[in-house]
Image (cartoon, rainbow, N blue to C red; front, top):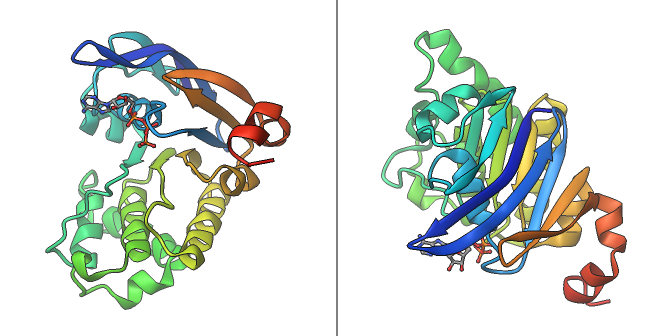
Length: 235
Ligand code: ATP
């Protein structure tokens, strides 16, 4: 098991956003987390990434407890996180945004090595290296945010709603990239509201409702679940 989350609870000023969540991600999997607005999906990723502090519960990554550690140490441990708002440096070029992703490494060769993979994944970023990040389209910004995360050479990539605010054609490109990222050896935990699209690429999934896991299973089991079909797929 690469990631094991047990009984994780996180609250904001006393209001519980996630409540006793347990979730596993095996090395090599794509695992999807779905659920309506406010279900706690972002809070779950933020807590794993060290951007929010849990009230209780454990997060074990590759056999080591990481809950409560600061975000930069969690990145160093091998977890890269792309938040919902992407948090790019808008005034900096594509090239500099990517460079900032590789800050973990000292040697130039180490810092530049992941670029080859990134350009293969998103050729349009290579064409736009001098362009300021703020001038990229929404889809291109998401590609850059994912690429910057990959520059840390993570073992686990966590994506928060990568399809949000993106033209449909680019959404397909992003989902194809997620599949390619997994094929290249990086495990993926992805939060998405687009349930049928994400389950088409995921191995397993978790559906959250008001901060708790209400359904879990293989991608197919979730797609076939009566409640999911009614609530999310309009069937
Ligand atoms: P969405 O799909 O809309 O992003 P989500 O499933 O990711 O929703 P969260 O963003 O994790 O859900 O929010 C879970 C709950 O926690 C919501 O009730 C939300 O209002 C609350 N919440 C999230 N962030 C904060 C915060 N910084 N301060 C206070 N409450 C928060």
